[in-house]
Length: 65
Image (cartoon, rainbow, N blue to C red; front, side):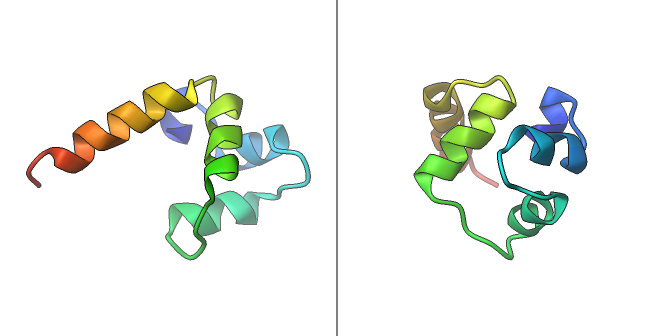
């Protein structure tokens, strides 16, 4: 999502109040889990509607790997 929005980790973190680049890095590497509020904040920072993101996630999760 971040890359599709054209942001670096630093740029995205700057859009998230109180977050640093390491926050973005850790959740992207799977070292940190996100709650739904955090996902919503990241979606908003990337200019994506949370519902659209969730629908896309469900569709991708249902597709065979």
